[in-house]
Length: 600
Image 1 (cartoon, one colour):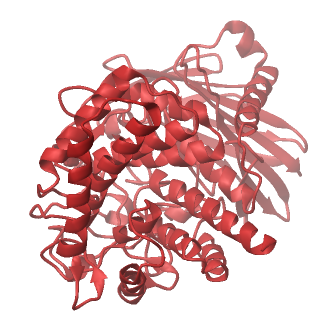
Image 2: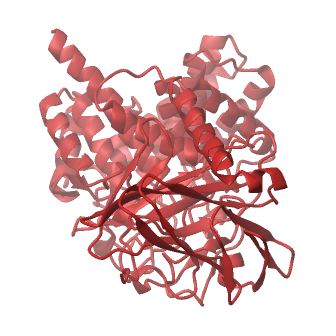
């Protein structure tokens, strides 16, 4: 059968080993994977170029197949099932998590559940974003792919393999109830394991499932939509480095926010903002170890002379933004960018978001060491001196700097949470100075960002445009949910940014603020902020209905990309941490309000 050249982002599953990740299409093809780490160059990238990108496909040789995908409950093991009148089979994909040796182990288990089924396997790696040549050598049923600079991957199987043009192939038939295994590693398997591939493959299969079931058992959440919450939690965990404790924004690069547009970014890095928000979600679900590991990462890498906006997962400065000219891009959307020039931007909101995460961590019994407080105190003092500065804001605009409402709000958060941390832990701080600045920032927000014409708080001090980030005002406890100015602001959001039950972050096509051409999709994180705001305002039934409708925009695996287009298609990098953590936070608030309503 002929497969589509491009698979919609909606039709991908997601696996990983807390070191790197892979996207698996609904037809069982691994179409994207970076190796060996999250931010390493790609080795499979068919999603970005069907000819040059490289892939690892397993194709059942049956006509008129129908495909479905699902995860084994409470795990990151992805099942791709194919059915037809002539046979039913499955591909089980997982990466084994190796927290000791950090070895790469990708397991693909192929099974015939009904009928005798023939398969064709192609493993076509394209190292270094498809820029490096490789050679392939075979020893029995192991094929080793090696680049000129000695990077290598080994493909092993219990079925015959052969090489053609330095790529690996296999053609075989499985009898009913029979399975076989393909294991891609960055080391050579022992001769014993090669000789016992079926039992060795099963060992990997169960090791992976056991890891995830033990991890998810730590959650304290027992409320509504629990399967959706667990899937989002596992997604966030898959984006977390087990070596470092950091969390990346998304596992992909170059996926467009609008098909054919220029907003195609590289999100495989750790943004302080995204990571801090993710810690809220982890802590509220009971995953305290992830929060502790993240704050150790902060202490190790971020307490330098200044805190950067974005880091690599291992605390380095991301590379300069460049384009991969040889890639055609997803559905011919160019440019395909790697690296991210946002690293050079000034964004004042990161201080408040980090300090708020520390505050929440402390509320969940996390200890604040005096050495840690010394650096937090230094950042609050920085905010005291710079809160009036113009910056690029939460949305990382490429246009002129502005005085953004969200940046001003989070400067207030930095002061407010800093004061509360000090008071709650009997820590030394300049009380009079900090309280004076906190009051001044609050006065500025009410005087400089309230727009009488719009009857709403607006995006920045020089506009009458509405920005979805305004919804964080009640979520972050700046403004009372019954405040008339807030009620009118939410009405403005609904009037100007709402599309069906989805929310745009701002009207990109109607403003020159961000310095980029064209429009974009609705921003899925903002859609979940809207649900949380409805719940906070006790519009519980409305929030619950809208929440269910938004979940309907996710794919069949409950995964969400960064944005959703007017056609309902997922666009932007996939899956996105911000979206899944916003989903979790909205669900937790809504579940709490539904319990209160039912018990009233």
